[in-house]
Image (cartoon, rainbow, N blue to C red; front, side, top):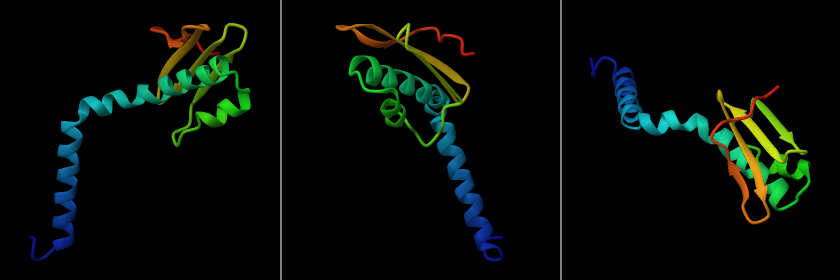
Length: 110
């Protein structure tokens, strides 16, 4: 088969290697969807409420290749909720000394 279809053999070998790499890193790959929403919520909260930058600047600051599906900036409560890849996270401004902190439970998005 290798002599008759060398490109097919190389393609199948590459697919097998990718599958083995995916399997060996399955724990890291499973954690990936939660990272983007958590990063966006925490960094936006810090940019906006700790540093005091305007909302437009902070929106550009957290922009990623993978877009957020939902985003809510509650200015009155100084709370930010972001959803990406099906995972939602909320960051809350606790005070001048504490800054922003991710909350264990995400706030509901409208």
